[in-house]
Image 1 (spheres, rainbow, N blue to C red):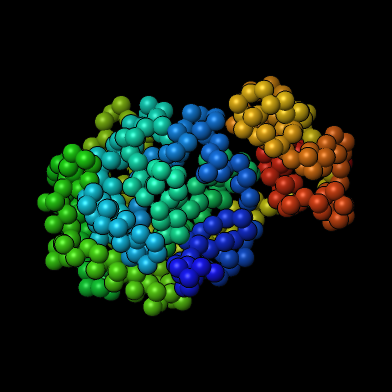
Image 2: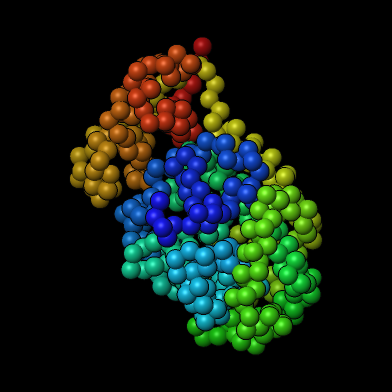
Length: 411
């Protein structure tokens, strides 16, 4: 271990399977979360972006043309590693630091929606995360990124089932982060209820709360920060210290803490969106209900349900669907060259959408080829030598079934 590497687990990336999560997830999530077998998501590789090949994304920006919300305590924790203080000061200088953490303005949200409308997401410089090191392509706060960034995969190996699962994890993580964010604010003496009233007061001048560069105006920031204005770094450090001190209680804290919302400001944000961008709004953006927020423990139940569906594979006979065909990778197209290390792929016979192509290693091809004939998938199937040779046999069979490449054979 390097002498400069942090010793505290909360400051280091958490590895579960082949996925890297922020170190704090081992404390803020339920204990059973650490035992999950996450989908490999082999097709979503940030440092070898498939969207750069498929959709013309910039290979140096990729999906970082988005401004994530990073909770206050994570910003504080990030100062203990690398150039953390410099990064935090950059966020503050850009006018992106609010008491809740790094937060974009309504103008930056509209810019993001414009990118979506113009099919410029991943290609435009209109919105770019300040935590992206454009020289290396790496995230400067990878071990402290938020739930959205931690659970986003542009192409899901398990199709719709995988999409549902990761969305449930993202929702859970975001809810826990927000609960801890507000808890920390109250603990340092920053009254969240009063803060939300100040946020709501900005709804009257929603189009003037930002400066030309996109960040919050000084006037807005003075209002939001109150007595803490000019002491933002100290504030984030205190929030981080609280989280470190109470790390083993974070799941309980998240379930017992109230989450306050600035509904009036949120409604004003939606109304400020130009009509031409209305199609880019999500249902959640348009939700104007005053209902109670869902407790993390209930969201965890949803996660477990979607997790069970993800891996559910009834012991019975399957065969390769007649709608699919196995093809040799001839390295002729850009997507074939992108997957030059995979000699075969499976695709729908009547569709040319390359995003749906599943490229296969030699050992995966040999197993899938066996499904040209009806094959019983039970414990004895997974005991076969060629199946056991796969890196993760159950993951492979489950995902090709989830994508309907395999179809059950009727008795």
